Image (cartoon, rainbow, N blue to C red):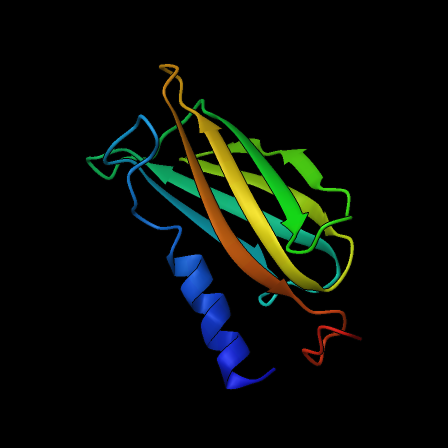
Length: 133
């Protein structure tokens, strides 16, 4: 993986942290992908949600949608499981091919308010970091 690709991935992940939500100002959302960078195929996704006081938010409904940056690909959509302590996860979010993806995380908080975050992620086709395989 090139240094530029790695930095772009880190910036993309950081862009999702600490920004106010649609109608839930002050709440923060952080997403982690394992492995990083994500490789074509199943990837563990963890979303952490905190309230304005920094406390974990439990009981939310969280969905993740992955769209390829180019037209013509079927999106991948999954509900995440509440693991407690403000952590929501999906153990095998399936990136169907390498390349540039747009991830959209949608959250419905227990009180009905919502927030949404979008970030770009480069998925590699092989463990050596080559997006084309």
